[in-house]
Length: 348
Length: 211
Image 1: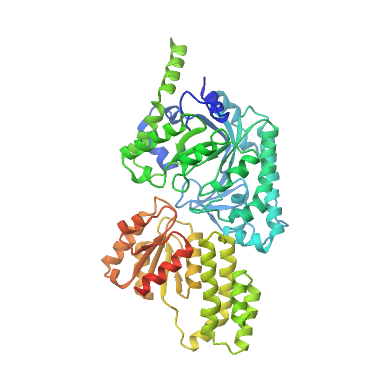
Image 2: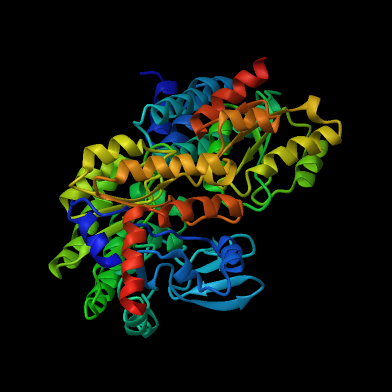
């Protein structure tokens, strides 16, 4: 059974031989790990089970002075956040799309390396990523405060903007379906530390119908739907399952009760994430990290779980804390046996 | 319904034009500006805060209510100044150094204005030195610091230390907040208070200054 099969097992509600994982790291954390594992390639060292294809945050033109511009024309200040950045300026200063053209969804940069990556990491579960998949794309273009007020001031514009974003995404998803992928991984943060940013009523009115349309395209092609959505959003799980969500990330333990949600949704929704990146990883001891990881592995044993830190690990996480959870994941008996069997097949 | 009830209702509904009309109408009816402020605008924003805490209002509703409140306040401000009506306190607010996230900080600022405070917004990426300089310049009662990231949260401790080093710590209260921030961290950082959201920040600020 390869890594792809293990992810299929958990998505299909069956009990896996071990808990699969797919962990992300920010540039700063990644640099520390690369240094530690060299000369081994980090992808090899981490043994992630999910192969991320496409681009979660898109492609950028360097404008100099630590500013970059994405394909939508949004300028990002990367002087502080080196991985994504913070939006600078406003592409849609007025609530209209009249003077704005969307970029080409079939830009080959999103697809060019897919065959080569599948060739190299074919044993992993392949996801095509659509980052900033709806609300986030809208606010990066319009400004967050503007967009939140537009829900009341200019509802027709909001609907028009969200539908146009979905058209762009759907064109990209349909192109991605030409490759042998397994799932589409959307990314769209709706939550705050407590509750939704826009509240459930506006979410249902504006976001939900558009999600339904995008998820239907993925399911129509027989693929799985994953979403990353930060914050306290578990009140939406039943609605999301109803329109075809298969896997939810980041499953943040600081904002939701991961154990009771796992019990409640096992068999209906798979969770990816769960390891505290706001508390345990940056501020806990190695022993704290070990205890939490072991607790999560136990929780996920019956299935429906892909373990990972609940966010790309930030640069403030001590090296020994990163190594503590990586080691526990890779030392799971089912995984080790699988790996040894494969090594035996290859070299035996 | 009195005219002040109308002012309140307009603010709660986030109706900017309606609020300004009602404030003008109240003034034409010879309602004292201080009363329009307290029993109209501030009372409405207190209700908005309560509704936010109860999960009846979310960020969009809070934003449009705050915009309506500010529209009403803009009409009242010169009249309040000439009647020598002072804000209930002065607050300096900012997002800490290394952090560019501002919506949480902006919401706290709006709710503080809505509670009757004068708010000086230092913006984002504010160094401890800038906080100290702003305290020396503006003599606030309260300093508020926001951070969204675990990587920038430690700057809050630096701000408290910088205020202490400049012998200003006793002169101001310090309140902190933001996604990763906890009550326990506020104690560790040497702050006076922690607020988990914008509505409770306004409540905590009032409590802090009444102590």
